Length: 288
Image: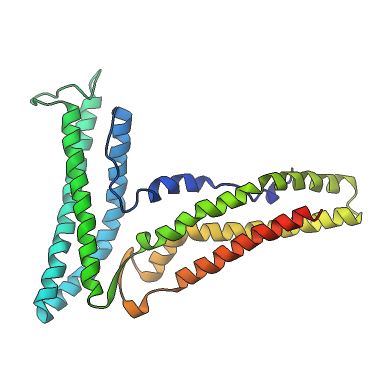
């Protein structure tokens, strides 16, 4: 079977993307019933910290000169920016320290020959489960606070006709479209399988017949289409990295009139072309 025309498939990457994007801008349910589910929640927090650390580093570069400016020019705006900014940093540090405490406690529990979440650690009066639940609530509250204060910053900057632009957040809607697009692509797999069979027959039977030549020509077009579809999917998958590089960070402050529109335009054009390619490819195969 000719593998290069198997361009209808659901990318493995989308599975990982699904678990991330469904939880973006939300506080994950930090519930756990056993050690395994607790490990997953701890890993979720670790990944959130890693991502958010990058955002805060970019945010710091924005806020320091902005605060310096408004401290001299407009004390009211300075207070409206400084208060949520300081709280954002405090929330992040608190989540980080709580995560480290949880990780240390989890490691201590696992080092025992036999362990249970309902065991009571030495020098404590409550179980591991209760300790983890307490940490869970504190992390949830701090994450909620973090997001609320991000919104406050955005609102204040909006009053100055500026946009606090979080690349990952802005890309999310576009990236989510990959599910629908690749689902549509996967629907044509049976047609591709049938075409591959005809292509193999054309190659091994008689490549000089008009029908065989037509099949081979179609296969070349399908291969070209596959590359175009893959290119747009790669654009969706990597759009955050591309935009971060273009804008100079994961968080940027942009005058409202200078908001980037090329990303949206490229997405709309690419999506329309993607859908049209699927239709054209189906018609090509059905023409045999």
